[in-house]
Length: 271
Picture 1 (cartoon, one colour):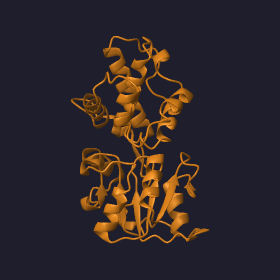
Picture 2 (spheres, rainbow, N blue to C red):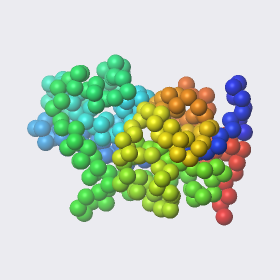
Picture 3 (cartoon, rainbow, N blue to C red):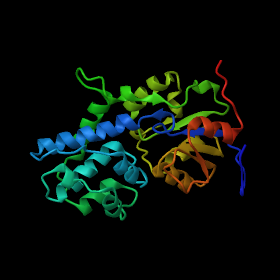
Picture 4 (tube, rainbow, N blue to C red):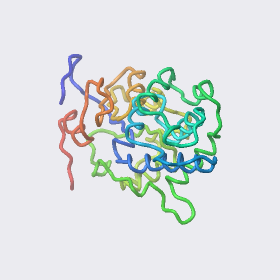
């Protein structure tokens, strides 16, 4: 068990983000964003002469609390690119430093912010529908979700404390995550997802879990700034950062296995 200056880490439940914590999905979602941007840029009559997304752009956006939703990332990038009046995608997409400057004045909601920043030339609903089709699959395409891999290779019932999910996925995408994790029997009432009307960064997911199940000291495992901001706004329990995206977090771990082992002084049972 880890002891902070404020005292020991002593949670009464576990709350997991999905992507980047329970599931390695960087390849699938970044590929989905890339395909959206390149397809829509080409359909607009412009020139696709570079990849439509990169790990560097991803890091900038995921380090900002307003860009947790990958389909909204694609929508944002397309509209920012179109605002510059360039034909070539290589010239239209901002460099990472420029993008960080552009989104600096965005609050917690990119949907409200973007129309104030530039003309909304790409319909958000259509972009989201396209993203879901690329990720979940459509017609004969299996979908990018098949690239996903579990990061926690044990069944949820073997965890030492009651587990819950607070994800930016919708219900259909959560069902795909269950298949990846082989957690098909995970209780539905322990999952907070966006179809419930709760969107990060917000403490509402943690508040819901605490209110409905009577927990006071959750530890929330997340990997992006929106997760960190949700935990900070909640104001109780602990936040454990998985990966290297949140250097300001007091608890940081390279992977979820290490995070669970060190925060709970626990070793998973594999049988």
